[in-house]
Length: 139
Length: 158
Image: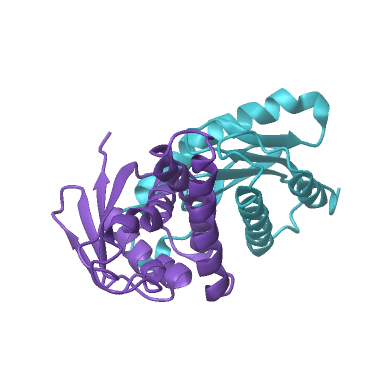
């Protein structure tokens, strides 16, 4: 269902990025890169918002002709960005939310792994296979 | 968090393990505190990632400090910080009147010189947690009479 999943560190460099049609990889990298500005904008707007609106899930960042880009920021300012095919209209907001939830759980496990150095690229196999299941569920 | 007794035992062993290694000539003695502090730092980073998974986004620095004093402290030490004071300019003092890791030692001033060994890990824990939430800080601890202790958190502004 997702065509591209990216984890961005708080200093805005990629910790993990993977996309499914590998031939257009660069395009997805570019899309994720562009989305970071929207993420920043949303976070700074959120600081002023009411208490109950301070959720980790940011919702739709921006749509393009063929894809939709969704965002999520953890409390440690790590960003998750997911690109979804917009022809897949069956995908509801709730499902995206639960996918991010899963991604966050997996990321936490990586963080708590003593062999992982915070700030390094994520090379965990468990994380990788979790992302794979998110990518091929529908495709 | 794992069972309380296990955490206390592991922590005690960790302290004596680090100091024993130093006595056998692996590095000098003064670096033990740093070593324990760094261990705490890494653990704090991991723990805070896990604990903040289901909480709402934090409003500001004070909000984060309150989280550390309440939720974080309760999960790790089974009690809240007794008193949090701040000068609103980046210095926070966290006072715990009955600090878990010191309760096993006799109260009063008898073992005061050894207290710093048992506080280094916790200092790192706080520093690691805060740094993962985007706050750079220096954490020091002071004890005047066991088992009460104070942690001073100095936030470093960019």
